[in-house]
Image (cartoon, rainbow, N blue to C red; front, top):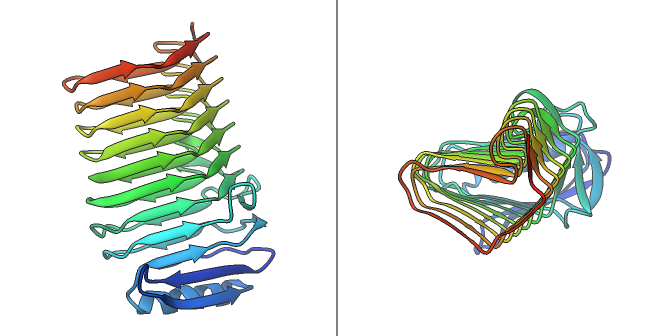
Length: 287
């Protein structure tokens, strides 16, 4: 398990087993101390909770976590306006979370991921690649001004399980391929986007704000705002595809653009049921 970076000021990390007390509390001020704390927590075989204190941190080296067992990882900031991880246009990926452990759940909240530049891959701000049967919850974060090839703000890839995005903001992210703001790929997992804001994101190919690519899992898109997102091909606001059920309800699509199909939203559904209700659509453009 590695979590490495060079930060300007001290960060408080609290690592522990949820519900069983703390494995340790560490106040660290350099890379060596930070790695020592994580190595000690790893050796205890417990779930890890990392608290990042308020501050604007210039990330000079990408942060990495990889767990090959069933332990959960929780990373909590002090609110997206208070805890900022800034790639300064030099880091290709701010945070990547990997591992193939079944039920190795991930929760990330209260952090801004900004100014990463990944021109050759997925997920400049945040990259999650997990195995089957896990739960991934991303809530109350901001992903802003990230650039890259695809799924630039966030990329989440799981075989099965659940991916939840609640109350995040994706703004001014750009992709030279698809999904400027966020992208999710799954085989049979369920995907939920509830209460998020997608603002001024762009993709040169498709899915300017959001792309969800599922083989047969369910997709729920509710109470989100898609405003002024654009795509040079299709799905200016969002693109959803699955042979499973798709539910799009009570969203607002405003001023999104696509130079192909679906200025606000494009859905590709070969077999499953599609429910669209209660959405507000204002001034979408298709060229």
